[in-house]
Length: 356
Ligand SMILES: Cc1ncc(COP(=O)(O)O)c(C=O)c1O
Image 1 (cartoon, rainbow, N blue to C red):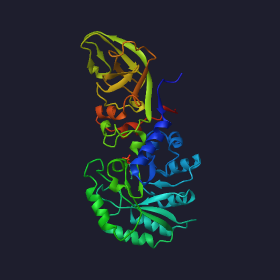
Image 2: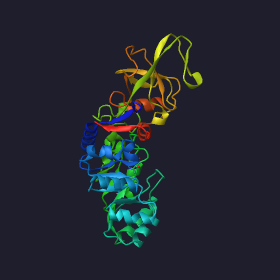
Image 3: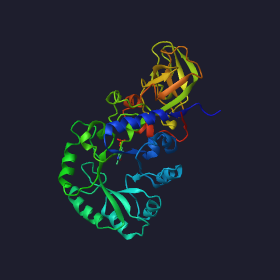
Image 4: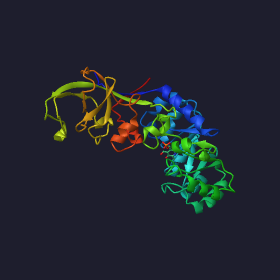
């Protein structure tokens, strides 16, 4: 029998989240962001739940090809564009839309023979300082793109650095409005946070990622608690042993937990090699046998320990939810000083995924 750990992907939750975001986005069309293998959920697994999207946005050419092979005939956007001029052959063959963030990419598109013009997302850097044309070069980039017969539709794109803050998009929006008043380009600006909380950034297309999976862009579950978004991934396992501790007994590597009284702990088949954060401290929430309890001691590669005091009926074989429908991933991430983004996308390949 395989280890009793698996991740469950709820297609109903995905469908629900897409429709929540559709309402939030108003008239804007939706690129469902499925980069990083759909934030750890698996492109093949989320695809059936996101059929009503307007397009899929991702990073890797091989992810785009996988999506076409699944049967998706609609738009696909490469969020970081292409990495070498050779990539243009596949972009052309699979009719992909590509971000363009640098002049070398414009030159590469001018130099290649294509079956049809390629649609591009011209990316401007509005303060993130990762990818994008410097604001003062945007006009020149747009002129060059407009004169290039290999380029079809041009859409303006930016990525906000602080859309999770109440006034976090004010400066970038002012910059875009100043730079682009004479360009008359469709716009695609908003990630999850801007789609939820900054309607003035909705424009023509939005690009939500994390919210489709039911986690919060801020890392705080309470910020999405009333939106109707639902957790998509439930990481489930079982107790594989129970230990009775006496007062003073220690647990796990380094003996970091010392029992202050006699009580029982359970050993869960889940460790950091499954994607559970090794730095999750004792006290991180976990659901055992349907009840919330906490982890104790250091997370090992394949196991972790939980306090069974709130669930005295738990036995080997009792179900454990590490995060998911009963325990928002944001709460586990919070305890571990990270974000749901990291926990979900770090699900290890050895964990099997099932859709429900
Ligand atoms: C360019 C771009 N657009 C959209 C997204 C989606 O972001 P989020 O998951 O916060 O909605 C990302 C993710 O980092 C991104 O890099």
